[in-house]
Image (cartoon, rainbow, N blue to C red; front, side, top):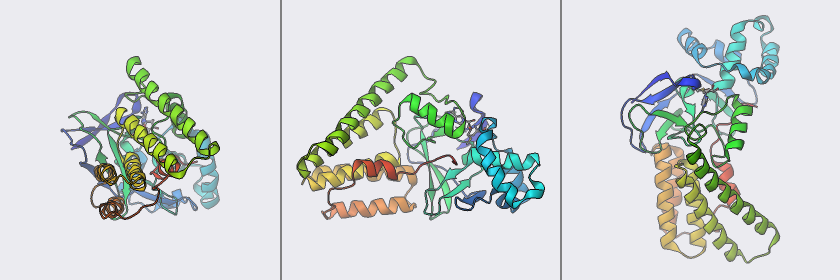
Length: 326
Ligand SMILES: C[S@@+](CC[C@H](N)C(=O)[O-])C[C@H]1O[C@@H](n2cnc3c(N)ncnc32)[C@H](O)[C@@H]1O
């Protein structure tokens, strides 16, 4: 379904070797290295690898611009392995770990390196999404929209996909040490302009909403009506930008919760069904995330009260992030 090959200034990348439909599972992969954030024994984990896996790890990409971030890992490594501290390989392993690890967003703050997933480049308008599937103990990558033959398969490394270009570039440069060359950041001035307009408009609305939320005492249902309207505008902005995935699925189901609270059951079902569909496409039906969403949707179908639904900031905070090691 895909092949790993050169992707210009981005180094290697993965490319579709046929048309891929939305919701298709592009890959499911178990980790090479699993590291607990509270006890980052990266070298010990690397030493336990088979020779073949060790070689695979050492072939992954290094990022020479992130030397300062590696320094703290080197100090930690020196405490555990003083004798081998000076070797080039140790520096490379830590650098590779830094440059290729993903946060699994579990309670232990586990971080992991996956051999093929590590070849997937970032895009600010990705055509795929990666999520950890605890049932499979694997990281899965799913197509979020139609991907053409030969098209590069990309995921987002960012937490806030609706950030403006300057903010996105700063996060990627500070967190990962590269200047984004995705099709949006390096795209035509017209495309960047349209995207900026859509995003600025939305940020302005969010700012007005949060100011009103804090200062103007309004009746609860009036606030729910406003929040539902804003959520639908955020969804529209995401879709206008060509973004999909779990973040939008959460927005749909939160909007459905608000529609229930406002007594519009028909709208709640429509929004809930769309959310469930987006979740399925992003994670697959065998994921615990999908199972939880299905349960939420059945409650909606049976007309169970779900209070005022999730609030906007909760939805935006809970989605999986691919945060760099800090
Ligand atoms: C997890 S690796 C991705 C695979 C990598 N390109 C390789 O050759 O193995 C992350 C690195 O890929 C490069 N990269 C990823 N996305 C990029 C983008 N949108 N623009 C420029 N470089 C990118 C950066 O060098 C980054 O440090």
